[in-house]
Image 1 (cartoon, helix red, strand yellow):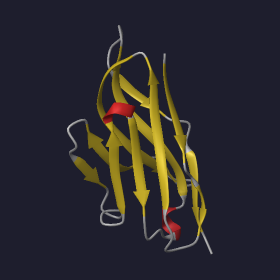
Image 2 (cartoon, one colour; image 1 turned 135 degrees about the vertical axis):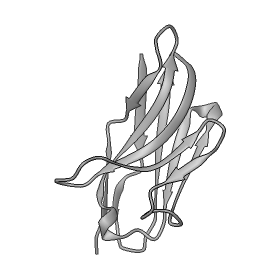
Image 3 (cartoon, helix red, strand yellow; image 1 turned 90 degrees about the horizontal axis):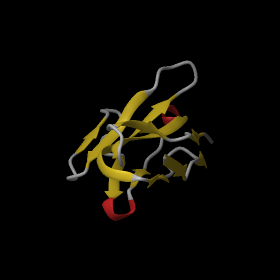
Length: 120
């Protein structure tokens, strides 16, 4: 059984910073990619950033230069450092990990979501 546990959301003023974390645990054989998505009220869930096991990153245009995704492979943990936050960054942020559980086929797993609110 695989679990993803997120932490780090909250309320921050415009221009502020937050750091999200997501740790994968359980019977994991290998991890392919880790990433973050977000969903604002009334909108679809959109990609924010991804990182491969080898460290290649990809960012959605509106966050490039402000957000940084990183990972600690030894801890099966992915981070999202969010700087210069704007009100339009307000959303529920979901961790996504494509991994191969021991004895099972590879697939995507999702975290429970963490609320990020940017407001003065």
